[in-house]
Every structure is written in C-alpha cells, then in structure tokens.
Length: 428
Ligand SMILES: *Cc1c(COP(=O)(O)O)cnc(C)c1O
Image (cartoon, rainbow, N blue to C red; front, side, top):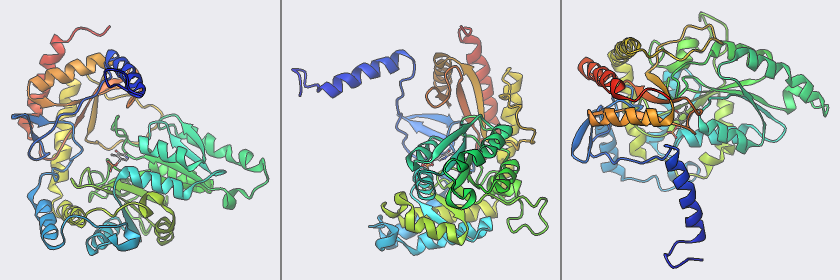
C-alpha cells in the first residue's frame, strides 16, 4: 500500500487533512515541560508563569501529596495490576473513596481512572435505547460522547437556557406515549450539565435544574470537574455552593442535590483520576455495569494516596481557596480595564460565583494564537482555545488562576496583555 516515499494511502489522506487544519490556524502542538507542573513551569530551559492549568489550588507540585505517593510507591510499587473487580482494588482506593464520600456528605463514591472514563461509563451504564438525555450544548466533550455512545435520545439545550430544559422535559410525555410505555419507570431521563463550564467559566443554575428534573421524574447528573475543591464554603464544589446541606436538614432550600455527582482528581486536587458520588444503589449499579470501570485497570494506588493527601490539605487549608478568590478578582478587574468583558449570559438570573476560568474572547483563531504567542515570548503561558473546542468566531485565551499565583505574576500578565494587544493587528 506504500508509494515510493513510503507513505501509505492513509498517510497521504491524513497529510491533506493536516494541511487544511494548519491553513485554518487550527493546528495544535505540544510543549514538553520539565520539572513540576505548577505555576512556575520550565520548557526547554526557559521559565514561564503558567496561566492555563487546572491546578487551581496549587497542589499538583505540592510536596505533601508527592510524599504520600512516594510512601505507597516504596511499599507497593507502581501498578494495580488488574481491574478493581479482579485484584486491582487497593486499600488506598478504598480510603480515598471513603474520604471523598465523607467530604461530600454522600453515601458512596467510586473511583475512575479519568473524568472521561467516568462520564462515558456512567452514561452508558444508566442510559440505553429508548431513554433520554437532556444536555447543555456546551457540556464537556466526554459527556457528549458518553451520551451518544449510550444510544439514548439526545436532546441538546441552548447553553444555560432553563426554559429550554423545561420545554425539553415538558415534551417527554408526548414522546413517551408514542408506544404507550410507563413514562417514569420504564424510560429513564437524565438531565446532564457541567457545573462550571470548562471554556467559559460560567456556572449552571443547578437549583433550577434539580427542581425541574425532580418535577418531571428525571435524574440530574452534574460534572463538577472545575467546581470541586474551588466552590462551596468548604471546597465541596458546586454541590456545596448550591446545596449546602446534602441531608436537607435545615438547608437553605429543599431542592435535592444532584443524583449523580462527578468530579475529577486531576484538577483542584492536582492528582489524576475521577470519581462518582451518589447513593448506595447508584454506586453498586455502576460497579456491575459501568464498562469503562469494569474493563479498565484500577489506577495506581500511589495516585489514590496522593489525591487523599491533597483532599486532607484542601480541608485543612481553606486559605488556599481564599487566595484563589483574591487572584480571580485581581485578574478579572485588570482584564476589565483592558476592555475585556465577561461573556454575556442573560438566560440565567442566578448570581454566579467567581470561577478560576477567565476567558478573554478574541474572535478569530489567528488573533487568539498571535496573542498567545506574544505572551509566551514575554514569559507567560496562556493557551489559545480554538475550534473545534469552542464555536467558530469565539476563539479565546483561556486564562486560569491558581491559589499559588502571586499578585506580581498577575499584574505582570495584565501588563504583558495590554502591551501585546496594542501590537496586535486590529480585528478583521
Ligand atoms: C477535564 C474534564 C473532564 C475529563 O476529566 P479527565 O480526568 O481529565 O479525563 C471531564 N469533564 C470536565 C467538565 C472536565 O473539565
């Protein structure tokens, strides 16, 4: 199948496609980091201030979770050796699951090797042909893929459009009666949303979604990858922010907290992996049916130990969340002075908590790329986010803040931004 240059037909087709991606300013490359992945980050011997990681609390390069991992590495080695249902389940996994459930006030938690695996596994386990998924259009790619894989009817709702969710739920009766099935029992309906949207940093109106889901006999699944550890009085994420007391006793509302809560361990906890928290029945069901969990090697026990230590630090050092909030405010105010406005989201009246994801909308991909490169030359690493990650015409710099940024680093970024913007050709 190879021609004289050694290129197969497949390669030649791929090269055409790659040239097209390059011509559209959408080509992506990696840069290998040496040393830690904290706020100070080294690439090919040069140091940069990292403004695009999801290490919101600065725990990815913290020595304490690293030391916890090292103790387990020394005692048990690297691999878990098998899936959790075979011999891969370790006391470190069990300890972390219990700590997470306890922290969130949920009956159980189940570890997955990644957030991607968790979302795919949960959606495919809970939904099948004849079921329905009602999803925000800006949900994370793993929720979209998991929903498609499940075979359920996929209803896409405009971003944060509560009325749209309501219409989709109202329409269920008609859909269900087509073949005379018992609506509430035989067909499952799941409302699925990110809590903090990963590219816009805005927040879903979870109380309204929860209320709507409950009223229509649907379940609510929330992906809190960017809220866990960051939002809530104790870092319990969007669930704690919106539903302060999961038990309901004396809470500020009687809206039930999400049936299915998912968060990752690779973001605010600085480790790797993800977990699902929920009822006893939910977790036991996932253990039987979530294929990405059943048929996948359990994560390294040392990583679970690191995440467990990060969780302890998160609980013991609330000042990290305060510093993060201060940094968000400092950057946000500075960006406003440079003429950047928070994206408009008129659909939802809820007061948004500040999140560490602060997008700077620039429009064309080339513009976002040029600005990102100019900042890199000045020692600041800020990723340009382009289609297909975001809709065409909404390319942006996605600035993320960490508790470990200093005020000087943030002011430095703002100054570099102002300077680079002035040199940038005006938008077409
Ligand atoms: C990062 C992310 C995921 C994927 O989690 P990984 O552990 O990185 O696979 C899922 N959902 C959202 C909203 C995310 O931001």
